[in-house]
Image 1 (cartoon, rainbow, N blue to C red):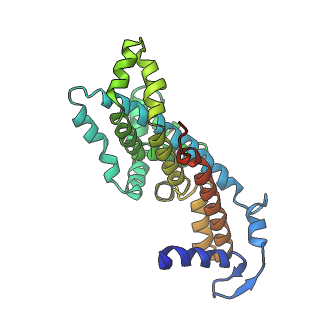
Image 2: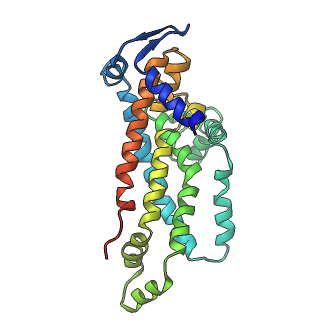
Image 3: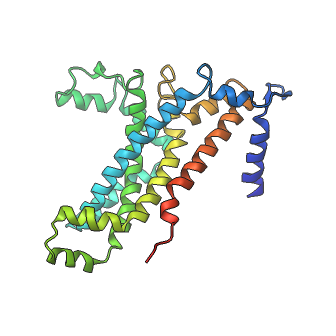
Length: 274
C-alpha cells in the first residue's frame, strides 16, 4: 500500500506545485497549475463537462436497463438462466478490446451498426451518422459501448439484491392488494437500497475515470469532443510532457471523487434508528 498507493499520491501532490520539463528540471510555481486547471483558457472545464455527460448518460442507462433485466430474470422463466449467462459475456471482455470492437462496428465504411440502421430504414445511407468522426456523436458512441459492457454488472448486483428480499413480504403485499408496480417501487427497490447505492457509487467512480474504451474508439477526438478528464491528464503527461500540470489535475480529480464517495455513501453508512 505504501509503495503502490501512498507514495505515488504524495509524489503527485508534491509535483503539482512545480513546473517540470522534459529533462526533469523542476521549478516551484505554487498554485499556478491549479489556477490554470480552473481557468477558461487552457483549463480542463470542457473535459469535466464531457465527463459529467458521460457519467449521466452511461450510468443512467446502465442503472435503468440493469434493474429492468434483474426484475425480468427474478421471475425465473424457462430459459432465463441461459439468457442470463449469455448476457454476462461482455464482462469477460477487457474494456480496451470492447472499445476496439465497437470502433469497428461503428465505422461508417464497413460497420455493422450503420448497415443495420440503413436496412431497417432509420438511415438512408450508412454515412448519414459518422459516429466516431462527428463531434456530436463521438461521446455518445463511447457511452453506448460502455452501456453494452457494464449493464450486465448492474444487472448482476440488482439481481443479487432482489433475490435476498424476503418472499413473505411480497406474499403479504399481494394479500393486501398490492399490484406489481407497487411491489417493485414500494417494496423491492426500497429493500435493496444498500445494493443500489453501492452499485451506483462504484459505477459512477468507474465511469468518471474511464480511459480504455474512449481511448480505443476516439482517443478523445474529434476536436476533443469525447475527451474526458482521464484522457486529458494522460495527454498532458505523455504528449506535452507537463508532469506538474497533469499532477495538479489528477489531485483535483482524486479529491472530487473522494468527496463524492463520502457524500453519496453517507446515507448508506448511516445507522438505522428503531
